[in-house]
Length: 196
Image (cartoon, rainbow, N blue to C red; front, side, top):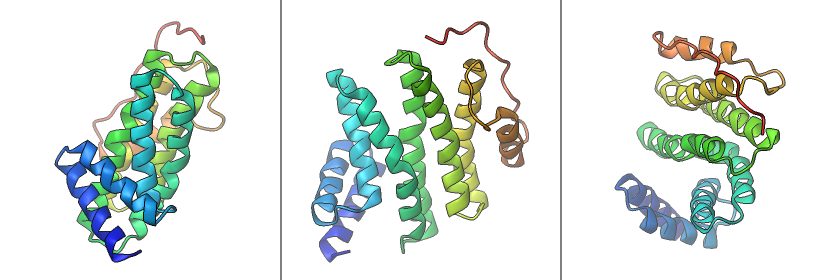
């Protein structure tokens, strides 16, 4: 990375941490101008694109797919970054805090009643937690972040239990979550929930 990209990436992180999302986006966009393959900047720019698509009420499904597709690379990029563990975990926390509510929005707003949208959303939450676990080698501090999307996925899978999640069982993730949060219990399955 160039010096200016490193500077802009650090400024983007600082702005995001301070709640200055517009400034953070501007710095992430500058990083992408110089380093188009920067996975962290790409993730946050895709996230802001998703937010904009919600406001404009157009292109939401496409921007959601771009966001989902950017998750794994972003987590791997942050894990491999040369910054301190605390800085890495702060960025991962920002990713979790931005992404975890996305699937809840998608299912509750019913932007699509398609089974695929709901299934992919739930699975992407499981994937996010697994990306964190795998890229941070099950580090105890990272696992506190990994269980956040897993809890949300379990909740949504129990709500939309009639769908097929091809090999992903909520009970398996509950066991993983309970290693970090022993008090967590699986929510009851929802009543009759329409598939669309």
